[in-house]
Image: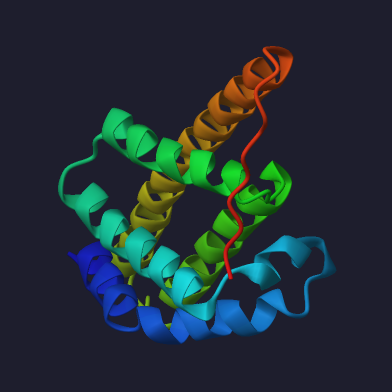
Length: 161
């Protein structure tokens, strides 16, 4: 029950978490391509991850999560964002969610501490599947672009404002 309470708090305060991530991306030189994404896009991604984390707690579906995030990998490849930056951004969101959960957990009793550890383990599993899905989608898009290029077709990259 504690885990769902913590996730509910994360879900409730996702906008604050998103604002911290938006602010932080300006300070990270290795996330230079993410500065091109709008704040709206970053907020949408944080919102998406928090909602899907909640769904994951209710019904863990590894294949479903990986398939869903393959599309994000394809989109980020088309936007010209390096895979390392895509993965770093996802892991940054995970760190913020984990930190928020830990900072806002009274965890006074052994049961509460155990509940937090379980929630963090579950969150880590969810993000593992997100990362795998993004990497697969990115690699697939990269492979298709290479095939088009070798066939003499122009590569099309979409850029966000």
